Image 1 (cartoon, rainbow, N blue to C red):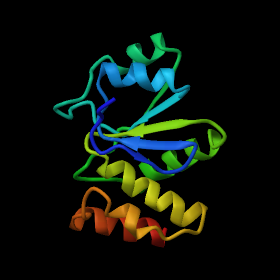
Image 2: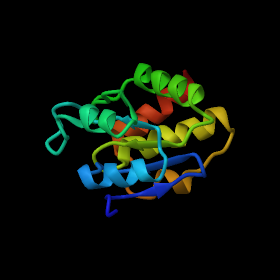
Image 3: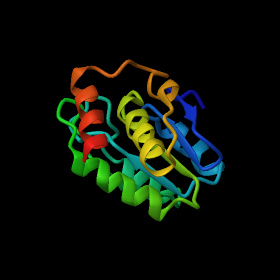
Image 4: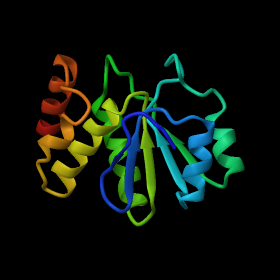
Length: 141
């Protein structure tokens, strides 16, 4: 597997940029039962039939389209609910580059686990002004 910006958060949560079909097969072989995508359907590299591919591999696909240029607090709240529902499952969470995901995971760890993991937040990128405002807004909500 050679997925871009792969990062293991812990034994239950793995994150990455956009996997390809071969990566999904490896994800299935590693006993992941749930894949969460934060990609937008209009993202240039998105796999249009990702849900069908994962369903054939007996993996549940959950799609939360998060606009990279206009992230919404509501998107994060949905993400948080899903993470908490499936907290005992192995989760693979991806977006296009793992920027949205690492930001959402950072906020999850901050809010739910009371861990301020700034190192995680800047593993693959330094959040731009839009995402810094989003982080501030979520923290204040």
